[in-house]
Image 1 (cartoon, rainbow, N blue to C red):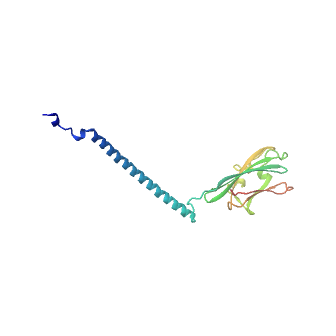
Image 2 (cartoon, rainbow, N blue to C red):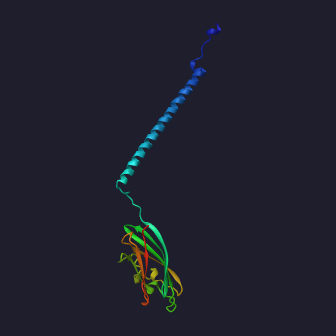
Amino acid sequence: MSKKEKAKKPFFKKWWFWLIAIIVISGIIGAGGEEEKVEGNTSKKVENTVQTENNDNKEEGEKDPKPKKKNFTIDINEELNFKLFDVVVEKVKVYEKGNKILADIKMKYTNRDYQYGDTKTFFVSTLFDVKQNNVDLEEINNAWDVENKNRSDVFFPNAAGGTTGIKLTYELKDSETPIDLIFTPTTETEGTETVTIDITE
């Protein structure tokens, strides 16, 4: 048998076959990945289109289903000086609870009635009204009710020269009209003092 008649190698054992196979497989894998990317980009475009349409509808007058509830605090720090006591209106917090708009009013009351002694209260020192547009507002925790004297800040005895904190919560008529805090000392010789608070954000 001559060398020329030597048996040929099967084609799958030749180097060029494996090179072609690798190139073809790489091409198939690469094409599959591009298809996935194209599908992903298409879905993003659809999402963006839907989102833009939703925004257009809102601009046409539709409101968000859940409007943002009011909840903000106004720093006042206004001091009023009377003959027998001082009051600092510190802050007012306006917020929504349920379907009500409420205002927490925080004050500091200082007893300067040294003849009365160590049991003077805010309740005894002054009449206190809270109004919106000349309409009396309701204190929702019954703080002015004598039956609540063991729980309400307005009935806590304050030593002569001492300061105590007072927090009262009123239901507002609306969230735009300013609030008037009206102090009328019980001395009957002093006039009424009013602190007006703008409650718009």
